[in-house]
Length: 113
Image (tube, rainbow, N blue to C red; front, side, top):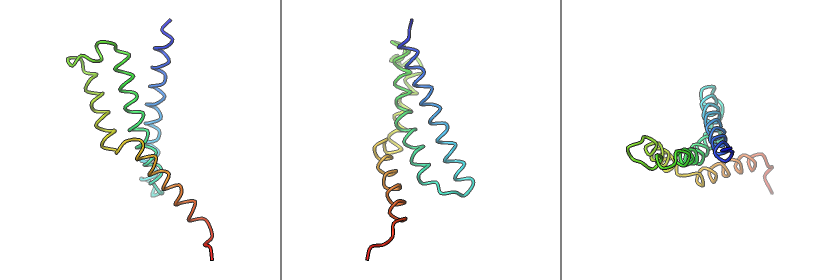
């Protein structure tokens, strides 16, 4: 019973843990003086993509109360949307990460004559 609900809640938990782990990874790299650009881009992607997905799932799991402005969930949805927009959205983060990976790979190639 309620298997669909449990699956959505489990996906939200996994997304939340992924956001937490990638944020801590980026913070650790920054604290230890390691290169951070890729780790920060990954953390930003998770925050903008999964953050919005978790807020959306939470609102749906609460049914009608999720849309009621007297219930606090609508604020989390708005905050998640603000974070997504502040981080330029998941597509921008993937493009940035792709550029970083390509730059790293190209830097390791020998120069052509």
